[in-house]
Image (cartoon, rainbow, N blue to C red; front, side, top):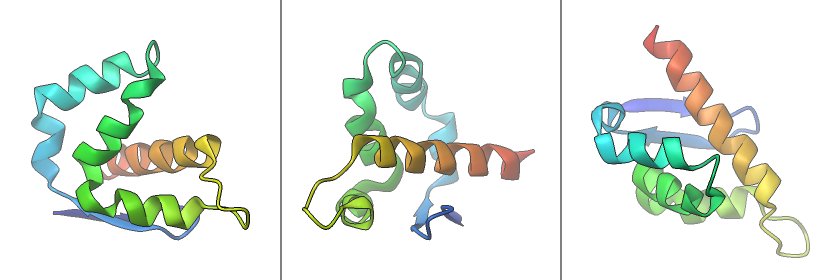
Length: 85
C-alpha cells in the first residue's frame, strides 16, 4: 500500500499495483482532452475515500470546488511519482 498526505492534509492510501494498471494509464492519458474522466481516476485511486476527499475540499456553502479537486489529484500523483524514484 502506498500512503501519503496532500499539502492540505488529506490522507490517502492505495494499492501500488494501480500504477501497473493499463486502464488507469488510459484514463490519465485521456484526462487532458476529457476532464470528465477525472471522477473515474479518483475512484480508481482512492475508492470509497472519494467522498472524504470531496468533504475535505468542500467550502462553507457546500460547493466541491473542481480546482481544489484537481489540485489534490495533482498533489497525490506528483507525490507518489517522486516517492517511486
